[in-house]
Image (cartoon, rainbow, N blue to C red; front, top):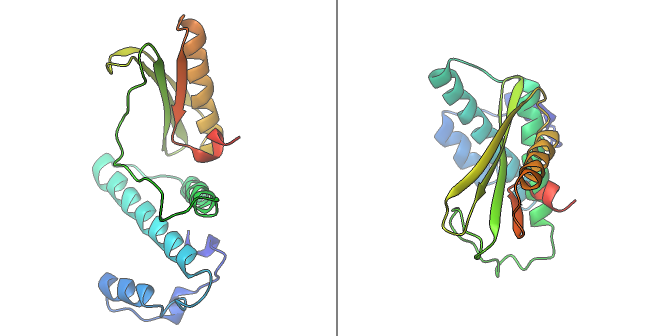
Length: 185
């Protein structure tokens, strides 16, 4: 994962005592100078790598499975792209209204269809769940997708949500996804 980054940093060029020492040197700018214009993006990439490693360790220790490295790299690349897109948008970042992650109901009489994906090994699951303004689950579809490219799977989940809305007669509906790249298409 690390060698897929655009910084070309070789870890053997640095000596770290432990993870605490690595984090300290990373944040104070010993790995990439903190005055470098790409320092914040580098920190983001490093954080995403650490998260990917942590998730993979949990998968191995709890599920007795492991994920294809190519899948992890694709997922890491997509996450970095999504963050870059948000960070480079025209928002005033100090004025962004940040809320805790939680499901928000649609106004009555709307129906909200949430779509999402989960990727494991060489297979992915796409899901669409329809709820009313009270949070009652009205219907749900799940599909196994034999692909591991995150954006393609997100599109499959969106199509699953669209299929769900066509199967039911809901005059007012909205589909919600957490994939910024897909939503902005």
